[in-house]
Amino acid sequence: MTTLSPCLKQATPVVVDHAIGSYIFGTDGEKYLDFTSGIGVTSTGHCHPRVVAAAREQAGKIIHAQFTTVMHTPLLDLTDKLGEVLPQGMDSVFYLNSGSEAVEAAIRQARMATGRPNIIAFHGGFHGRTVAAASLTTAGTKFRSGFSPIMGGVHISPFPYAFRYGWDEETAVTFALKELDYLLSTISSPADTAGFIIEPALGDGGYLPTPSAFLEGLRERATHHGIILILDEVQAGVGRTGKFWGHQYSTITPDILITAKGLASGFPLSAIAAPLGLMEKAWAGSQGGTYGGNAVSCAAAVATLDVVREENLVENARVRGLQLQAGLKRLAATRPMIGDVRGLGLMQGVEFVDADGDPNPEAAAAVQQAAIAQNLLLLTCGTRGNVVRVIPALIVSDQEIEQGLSAFEAALNASGAVPLLDAAALTGATV
Image (cartoon, rainbow, N blue to C red; front, side):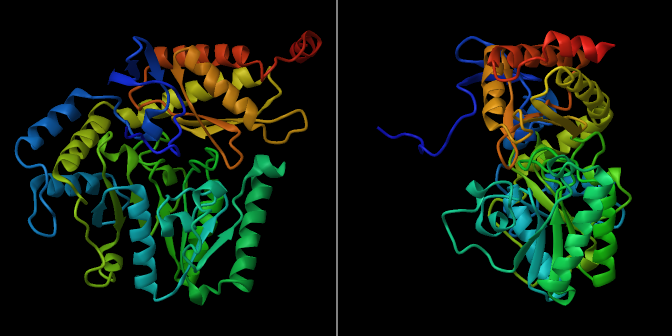
């Protein structure tokens, strides 16, 4: 009997029968509120009728039109649609299948454009599992260990993780920028540095928004030294953070932008975007791929972008995200083992600590598992596995947010791992 690889570990025991909107219906007859969105992929919810219709129609025309052999209209239409939302000046796009592929294309582009070998990434970043992408990933050793040697020319600099350091954000940013300058002075000369790569909000690394001041410091250094600034918007992009792109909370524009996940509502599709003058520096034959820019995926992406715009989903993500964060902070206020609640839009993280303030992955796992009994699906993340991430679809309603918060509170109570403050402390807190 053939089985799935034993390395594939499910976060929940749910087997899906069908799904619609914010809900998954299991073969067990249960209805689950899905606050995982396929790890931030089902941006328009499960099986949005316009996305389904677009994919069905395209599948009846042509499924696979290899885009270096023949061109197809969904690819051209999608390129026009992306041009409406990409940062000004980013007028050239290359399509692939996955986030990892797009990351590798971006670093290849940076090296070719500059003629320099090195890439600087940042602690806690997740950029993929393929060899080059994993070499940039420090969201956990499980992503990069056991298959050395990994790609050379990669150097890692601190991320301004204020909660971990016990500092305010300004202090953390100042420290991280000074350490980056030290790295450029001691390990990777600017003359050898092709690119910086960073997420506007860490994904697997713990759902940490990258401070605007840090992004602006990177932009300043990249411009001064001729380094390519690559923003990995695989998870944060397409409205997830309450802006169309996560970096738009800052003043910067990247040199290369990477998008995937929510772009096609669940169909495999990714892309890198850059100014034409930069994209033209790719070597002949360096961009391609059998399945990149698949016709059905592109048709789904066109429909996705239409839905995001016409249903005002970016603004919905912002408003519902504020509601979600306020509710999570209310629950954290009486539970000292919740050390931090943070996030942007519908990308919220709840960090669990022990009595000494150290990472508490056991509590995070207990709460995530207890939520399943409350018919709420969640995931964990963080470099120590001590963060529960909350990722509703962009179509989520205020009632569904409240339903999710109620279920999360019940899971906190049922887990036994996150006790309330005692009565005396609660009384003192309200005086």
